[in-house]
Length: 318
Image (cartoon, rainbow, N blue to C red; front, side, top):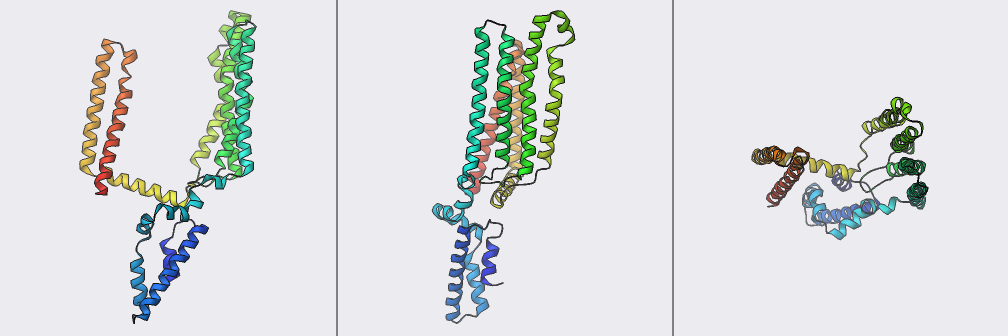
């Protein structure tokens, strides 16, 4: 292994940006200069290479010791600025779909209050509201989904345009089905008021909503589930490495028998107390409200876990 191969191996797994290439060249130049200096002092070339390489140290420790300014110089172009990935056309598309969604909401409000001014029944107003909103927000949801999935970010690569279209189609079907539900529901109420009990017996709102939305929600949900389950890992090398290290730290932390025992005992005490308080408050004020204690119990559980995480991190740093 020569000096260049050694430097390349130290940065294996990092994305080869222009800034990182410059940093590696600077490091290689310093390494060669150190080897040359040791050889001039009478050391054998192999021994000089081994000594200089050992003094170079581990790249992870070296990277951690870099000043924040130096880190930004080396890695900032690739990871720290999402604007590098946002073309003018993409920004314009985000703005257009945002305006489309806002226009749909305004049109829906205009339709609702226009119906209300006529003094007609409220179901017609709600039907007009959701019907006016439906095409604009459905298009906006599909558009934002396509732009979001095909957008390269700080930590993730984008999906292909073809796959992005499938994501947009799934989101559009689901959005169309969801916005259609209130239109059908309030529409059935209008029919009931106009034509009486016959339609009330044969066309109930809930059944009609379920029947009409099946062609939209089921295909859209199935397609979205398929896309999510077949999605490849799109994390960039640095983000993947960071995630793996975070998972490893968490596993090491909770594999500590003492920490796991403390957390288990505290969790058990929290939920036993919450269950007892639920029953007590249920008889005192009614079970309609006593279930709220479980929300507070979950909050206390998260607070305790946060304290344990903090204490473990502090002990690790020491």
